[in-house]
Length: 235
Image (cartoon, rainbow, N blue to C red; front, side):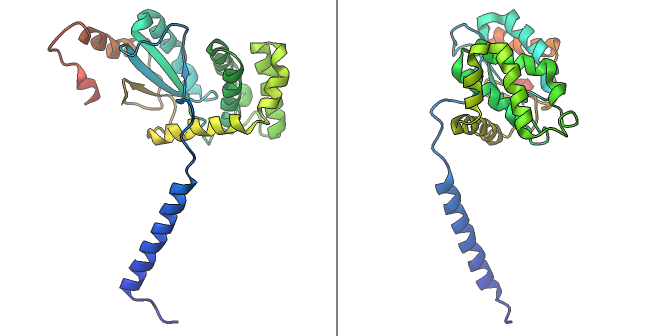
């Protein structure tokens, strides 16, 4: 068989790339109707406050360890900071997607208070859903266990809603949007934190309370002190 020359090969490759690009563009869904993430707390979001974004996996041990000091920070600074949590179900945690989907379901039927109560429940009992512990369970058995546990958090009256939520494609899509949003931001590990849109170093590792203070105190000082420059942390 005659081998194609270099020009022909380049033209074929260019045409194939064009077809793939077009198919990818047209396969993209519309933007979601709501910005991804769960806002922590009941206070009104002040857009002049310092924004913390946390990318967490509900069955990730490092996400679990990062949560208590992060809550301490939120309690300390009050309305001077606000938190937006994004879920990133890591693919090597077998049950991360199901757990994240449960959080989206609960968030859709109740206020964020129950969303974070369920997140904390996962952090407390996440070992039940590690890969080794669920190796011999079917996906349905895992979902049923999560539904039963979520019902204990939000109340038995929501049992039917939780069960139907796992049959609702919308909750599946919301969980996928969270994953794709994380990927679009270049996040590949949990926990990962952003402050005012800038990613903190050491992604995938918890940050302790003193570490948070070291970062946030200068930023709060900048709001009242002119001509100071503390942006070196991000540079």
